[in-house]
Length: 148
Image 1 (cartoon, rainbow, N blue to C red):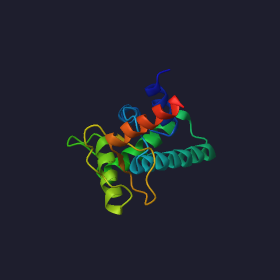
Image 2 (cartoon, rainbow, N blue to C red):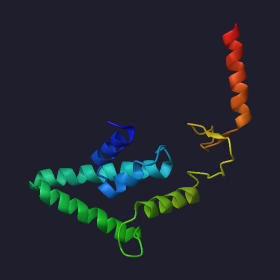
Image 3 (cartoon, rainbow, N blue to C red):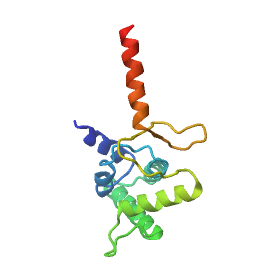
Image 4 (cartoon, rainbow, N blue to C red):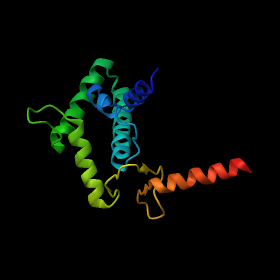
């Protein structure tokens, strides 16, 4: 199974539809605060709907129908639709990203050529970039340790 297929399978377990899984599984880094928030929220809603279905003895077809209605209503309510009325996950991601930036959870910096993203934020919780010069110095230190 490919890495993208594994990502899509995990998203399926969290309650994402095919059109959402297709777009989300393209993202190599899914650790941004707004994407984490979407995944956690969807998983929580999916589990709650599953509990309701178990209590009321819904068939799998009825569960899928109700879950689909719920998600599409949420898209309509939040305005995450294209001009023709179809749900658009990228609109959802863009709006959640803008909200995260507004709240200060994420600071977007331009990516200069030859830089790499750190995997963890600094002590203030801000994602910072590693300069290419830092990577070169790190390689030099590694080579010096290898010589010893």
